[in-house]
Length: 68
Image 1 (cartoon, rainbow, N blue to C red):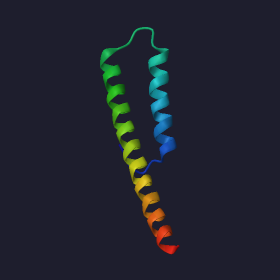
Image 2 (cartoon, rainbow, N blue to C red):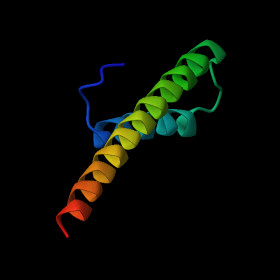
Image 3 (spheres, one colour):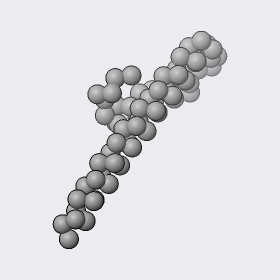
């Protein structure tokens, strides 16, 4: 997965995968496995992005605390 995407793009892709599963009357197992793996990767990338943002906020908070 390309890391240049923003969180909104990841969430849209996850939503598309969820929608795909919702629309299936009979699930092609091979395709389903691909979709689950893709979703797993998107979720992992999203978590990593959120951790990075949290760390950035923590750094800003430390810097702001030093200004008081």
